[in-house]
Length: 152
Image (tube, one colour):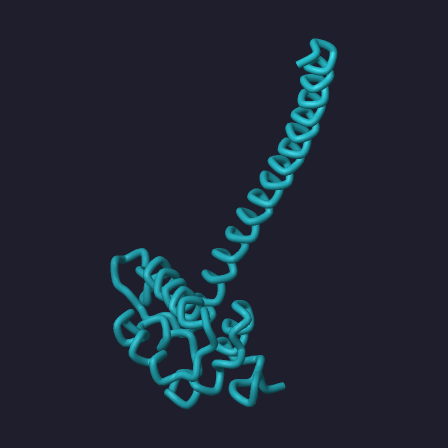
């Protein structure tokens, strides 16, 4: 199945864009020669900005796309392009996109866990706020009652 007439959902880039709700940009990326994650991960920020200037972007999507590309770049740096063998030599990893995808999955899992923690904390703060609002309303009622009794 194609995403917005661009890359198939089974491609790494198509799936990656889907994670960010940016599937509509699979066609412009494909037209620009990007069908995989590795090429996009190697794209310097200045070039990414220039590339996106040629895309028909919706408001706010430039920032989201730049963040998605920066995340790819981060994962590529963390994962490295070569694997160091025990004897100190290096060999190129034939599964570079797979490693990028694995790294992204790990990063996304961490982000989702952080999001859940933040949402739980926010719910607790909202409950505390509701309790404080109720306490304030009770104190205001008591204050008005005391004023009324004092004839103020």
